[in-house]
Length: 517
Image 1: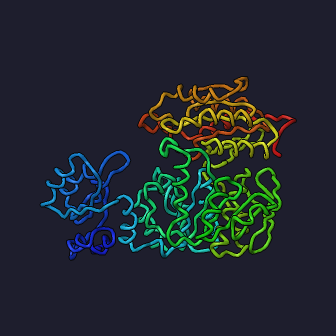
Image 2: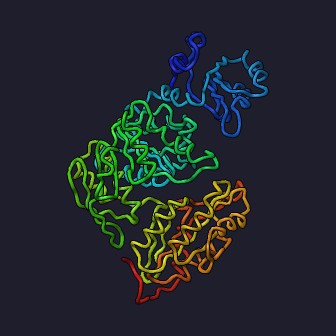
Image 3: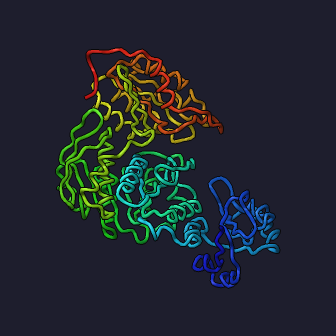
């Protein structure tokens, strides 16, 4: 059933008072930005998007029966379009509309985030893992926890893929409303730099903001690392934010913690036992006292404001220890007892495509991971060294139509930590796959242990066929993705499915050396 909401209530404070008066006695039954979804009684929102302006589609929306057109921005034929529809529907100008849509939608959906413990997670790497670990833990000891992020929106065992880390402002608010109406008390949201820069999470009342790390990424969009960092920082200036959970081991995280501590309570987390150098950077600390790897995880001893605890996590990679500390700090902020927090963390499951292990007896272990940045690849490669004593094979590529500067840097990381490397195709999109590979290959100082294989399926076959028991084959870059993007076409391709296929047809054999650590 659609909500009938007074237009003056929705727009008061966002438009001139004179215009508010024109909205009296008008109700609308939905907010839409896509003219294809426009229906009778809707409010059509038209502003400049990333590729096109909504006003170009206003005439079609009006023909479908929308009641009001809310618009902003310059357009060459703007006046012509407005003249053609202003005698049919009310057209209202709203300055900086793009950044007000979230708050308007929040009013329409009765401000759902105010009824939830709303946790926002941002950073270059680790957002998805932290968000899903949090959702699992919150679900374990409380009423349902909703989630919005890269793997989909909804609940931990019932996610609906969207193709975006942070969806548009209207869908953010609708999803929060659906989650709240389903009885959830908590929601965890991955918040991308694009989402912050474009105002997609404006109007969300975040309780806690979590920062994982900062590395060079998305410079094709932001232009500079400073712009990228500035976009991330916006989350920590959300009005009413209660707490910030920040990685103090990250150079930018340390800077961020110092900056935001004057207006929000900061919980710092660290892998370091001695955190005396951080004493002026946070109000509370969660840090590791001892980290011991074993074959499928870590034994941890941690210190927190609520005491000390020892527990195991079934996760590979020191970056996942860091992610676990972020989760622990956030759970404590959310009023969990230390006992319940560590018990739930001990039972977390790895996230799809994030250090996902595929193993069969007498065969090399395959690990599938989403690492697609210099920092991400470095972290996961080093973790392979920590958990396995055999050779590390690294199969990776770089996506097309994305930041080209990181391509040779990815090669340098692979060369530093892997024994055997195969450079292959990722998602070429509109670039020549071979040209992308050539740019990656330029980053190697030596290609003695490097092979370039254009077809990703063949590359995975070569690695699994030639790796020995005790070796680990890291398939990096695509993680949970189930397609290969070539041009505008999505071709079915899943690293995990392909890996299982080649593992299943490989005969098991034993090797005396190597094996898990």
